Image 1 (cartoon, rainbow, N blue to C red):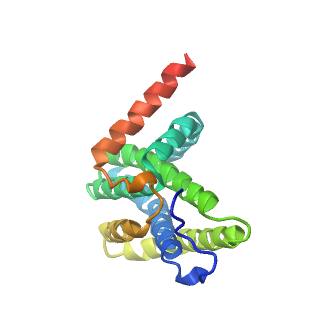
Image 2 (image 1 turned 90 degrees about the horizontal axis):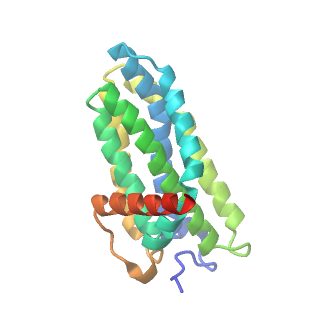
Length: 221
């Protein structure tokens, strides 16, 4: 049985695992909110079209349906902690690529960012479901997490727009710092990985995810 990181008798606001999840969600929402302002601005500076950003998001939604089962298998195989940390690390790399102000990096980065967010959010949702119940205030916890996510998405575009008056790179750097901090905090997510499996390299994670995706796809034909 997995060690429960959430204890019913403890105050939710003082629970390390709960606070860690809030930090991760807030950092990710800040990145999502700022990218809504940053990416169109970069494309405008490069003379590119911003309309295809919506197309990329639409493709992400369609693929999200296709890869749902492979993604669930991946999370089950490697655990929630590894999946959450993998999603954060991928997003850090994506925002570093945004610093180069290249259309190809924006296109591929926005696509990869969306897939990494799906992996991370699915893992967090699974943690909530597995580690809580009605008596443990599952609804209250989800309300806190949704509130934190909403606050990040609401305030971050305004902050990004103000910072871009000085440099378009500044909000990107802030997102990278925030994600890096959440990656460090994510080490505290103990008890979320079967057998306490240690965190692996990003290449192993990506290769394993592709392997599971291909195997599932071959079973459909």
